[in-house]
Amino acid sequence: MVTDQSDQSAPHAGTIDEEPREECGVFGVWAPGEEVAKLTYYGLYALQHRGQEAAGISVADGQQVVVFKDLGLVSQVFDEQILHSLKGHVAVGHCRYSTTGSSTWENAQPTFRTTASGKSLSLGHNGNLVNTADLLERSERAGITTKNGATTDSDLICGLLAAYATGDVSIEQAAMELLPTLRGAFCLVFSDESTLYAARDPHGVHPLVLGRLERGWVVASETAALDICGASFVREVEPGELLAIDENGLRSSRFAVPEPKGCVFEYVYLARPDTAISGRSVHATRVEIGRRLATEHPAEADLVIPVPESGTPAAVGYAQASGIPYGMGLVKNAYVGRTFIQPSQTIRQLGIRLKLNPLRDVIRGKRLVVVDDSIVRGNTQRALVRMLREAGALEVHVRIASPPVKWPCFYGIDFASRAELIANGLDFDGVRRSIGADSLGYISLESMVAATEQPRSRLCAACFDGHYPIELPGAALIGKHLLESVEKGVAGAATPVLVNGYGAEDALQRP
Ligand code: SF4
Image (cartoon, rainbow, N blue to C red; front, side, top):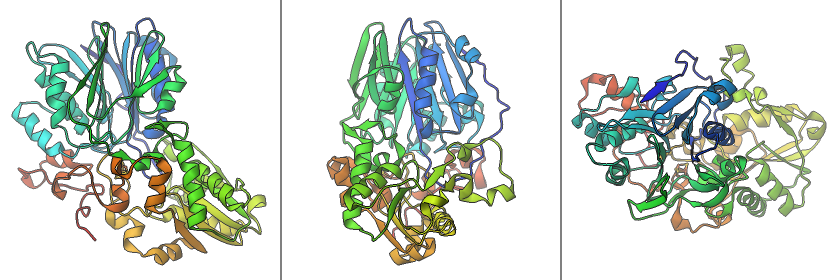
């Protein structure tokens, strides 16, 4: 049974930045005797950077599953009273940025279904599937209707899982049947009334880790979320593995042969610096990228400054390797980018100044090296260079801790369409001139990969080199709003047609 206690009238989040959007954060806990809703709240707090459009927690007590979710930051959605009302020993938490489907209440997670045998199922998903159209077809054949207008691949997974769990087929058995048929990137955390489940796609594109509490277990997108709730790291959930945790302990099943292709962008930008992926510290990776960047693209300068926060470790590395002093030249207004107050046109025109403010005393009269994590459309860097010059910088040398982003991501990150990516429209010097820098240097793909200390063969770097490790269907069958276009019956299409797809329309036309 589900009790939905959420406020469905909340406004939509307003966003005023153009950075790559993270996918989602997932968290699960099985711990009798613990306040699982509060543990999940803190876990989601640690994962807030992965999704800031919506947040939700489901709690199960052996008898029922209660879901509370809403649009907004974790701290906006939950308060003491709500958390106190969510009682049980199993919880699933989710914070969302939409990669398939719009930012609406219906699309917030955990998503909920009732199985044919009357069990409750709540599910949170991080990543993005590439066979959503195929799942939709299967759902229609199985007579599964879209729940409350939800239009996400995650809702389809939950619906199919519930449909497969009929009669004496357990949810675990249903998952072992369904999971091998999913294509794309998925870290799933789901529960029924008494059992916590976690599954990771065979490529292990995004991270998912298992932790131990004194009286239970935790699964989370990042190790940093284990730290914050006092869980010790046990291991990663393996690519192609399904975990089930209940009073009988922890069971592990393999639903596919692992073919690891971890997202290299997790190391560069997405994950927290205090997280470790495949045993490698994200912070150490970023510092090493900065060191290599200094060797590959040296500069005659007086000061190295980061674009906070994700450019900071690479700037430290650049300063260490180059011998140029490191300093803070920009102060970040950390929370304005995800405000619920829609900025007016006048305020919007302030652009980067809403987010970053220069320290004029530090910058004035200096030749600067400015280190940022990536360039997507180039608008941020253009505004940044202009702002630094206005603050008195003599020269601005831009150094980027990732190679040029030339391809969209279909595995859970929203960059832009290919046409919008600046590195596609302009050559190297064109990008430099466009952003107004005195010089520009990107880390090479080889050096970035070397800094992760992972074999190249075990990483996805498709947004940089266009080699997608998980086969993509035709351009008409992928895209963020695919399900909405189907729902609206665009042009009466029998086959799903992409409308306003974020990054898909031109993605498969090779340069
Ligand atoms: S395409 Fe880029 S962002 Fe997407 S999974 Fe691969 S490396 Fe990560």
